[in-house]
Image (tube, rainbow, N blue to C red; front, side, top):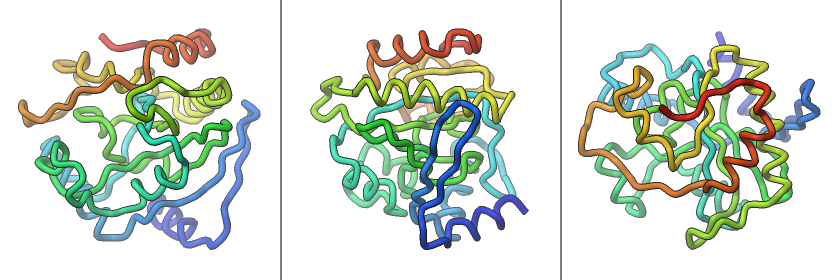
Length: 222
């Protein structure tokens, strides 16, 4: 029923707006997520996590913050909008051709866009996708930390919104910290050779966001 409702929403021609108690406004801008992409995501779950799900729903337990390494919003959106990786990411294509995806994309002015249902699995963080909600921040081109104060404030509000919506969430990490979960119960990756090195979104950004949500008591990486 949840998947059907989201499918109908995703066909809406206009951007949706939603507000929450945190004062956050979320704009819906759906990426392409056809039945083929859903099937490819299910295959990824089977191949990498050893699960055989009926759908692609997750129980959120961790929030992973990223930067896109691209400084333009529209270019970032188009990257996620493709359903297949293509030939641009050989380091990821070895693990399947379903494209990377993300639940949220935060523009440089702090505008928060929801690209796909919050509880559908997105491919954004090796080993943790099956329990993670991902947040990409436009920026980080050439590996330079240029994320804005508005993005920091938006991420703080978004983390608060997500924790309010999903009491199962216990962890908040940066993408750069994901490998510290190896051996943790949330780590499900079966391929010991499938890893990438990450530096995003950087210590400055993570320190600021963690300070802003310290009262929530979220845990960092092991």
